[in-house]
Structures are given as C-alpha cells and as structure tokens.
Image (cartoon, rainbow, N blue to C red; front, top):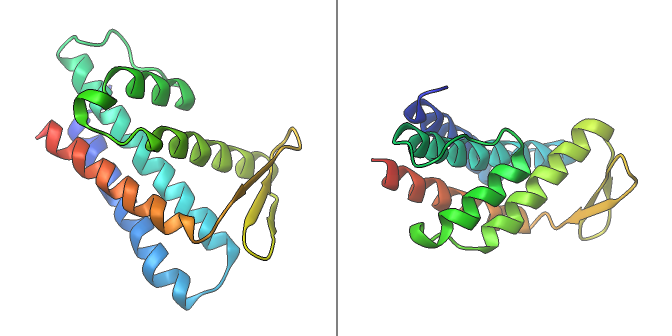
Length: 154
C-alpha cells in the first residue's frame, strides 16, 4: 500500500503537466498526439487523487479495500464520497470517458481527426469522440478536483 500523501503529490504533478501541455505546448506544437497525452495525464491525476483518498479512508479503517479496476474505483468513490466532498457529479462521466479514451487508445492506437472533433476507435470498433476545446474544460475540472481532495487530506 502506497502512502496516500505520495499518491497525492503524484496527482498534483500529473495535473500540472496536463495544464502546461494544454495551455503552452499545444499552442506551440499542433499535433494530435499531444491531445492524447493531455488526456492521459488528466486521467492519471484523476485516478491517483481518488486512490489517495481511498487509501486515506482505508488507513482509518473506513474502507475495507481499494478497488484496482479504474471504473469500479470511480464508481465506488462517487457513490460514497462525492456528495460529502461537494464534488461535481459531472466529473464521474468525465472520468469514465477519459479512462475509456486512454484504454482504447493504448489497445488500438487509432486516433482519427474530424473537422471539429477527434475520434478514437476502441478494440470493439466503438467510436469515442471528444472535442479538443472541451479538453481545457477537463483540465480545469480535474485541477479543481485534485485541489478539493488535497484540501480534504490536509
């Protein structure tokens, strides 16, 4: 079991990297792989902060075990703790979408570009689309989420 403080520091670092890539690097380099990298860092920050909170709860024996599956981890966190922490419920769907995007991209590796959106093809040939302008909204929401969890754990 990793220390929850170490996980929280990793989450803060990941969200800082995603923020820098979204607002600085993507303006300098116009490449679609940077968008995937931003989503990957956001997904890591999101999952690391949830893991950190769940390990904190496990340390005080309020949770028996922490799920290893990403979707189960997100579901259990939002069903039990989101309302008490005043976390925006829309983050749950964003978390699922980021996880599905990264899993599909790492398994299949296909990123298609349309005029106003990107499309990732999953291994089951499901099309997952996202708006590149919506990525900055995800960065802001994930940054606020990590900040909320950090304040709770302090």
